[in-house]
Amino acid sequence: MVLIFVVCWVITLVYAVRLMTKGFSATNYGVIEGKKVIRRIPHPEMMEVKPGDELMVVKFGDEEPKDELHEELKNRIEELEDDDEDDDGEGDVVISRR
Image 1 (spheres, rainbow, N blue to C red):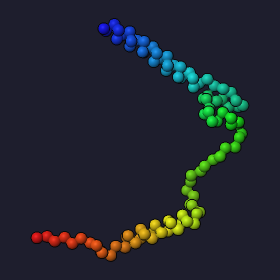
Image 2 (image 1 turned 90 degrees about the horizontal axis):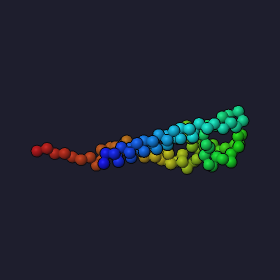
Image 3 (image 1 turned 60 degrees about the horizontal axis):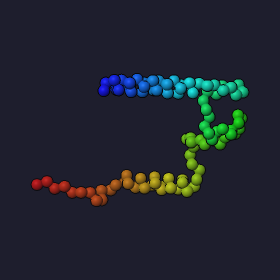
Image 4 (image 1 turned 120 degrees about the vertical axis):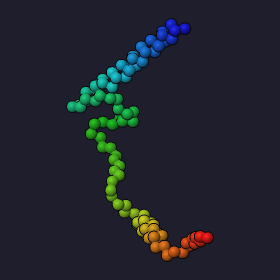
């Protein structure tokens, strides 16, 4: 029984080491393109993109929105928050102690 376990363990160890060494060597194949050395496979959707092609860029920054409806909504929310802060005591709970 122990012999079967040891044989399976050794076979698994050999396959694990082989897989790890193949994985490390697959990323360092190095393709020279122009003046750059590309060391990884490009994404499948980027295969048709040539060096120098213009790509669409989305920038999420600190810019304020310019939409009028959005501004009105933002102002209304601020007004409602200000109204909540101006609590005049209505609806307070009275606690009586005996």
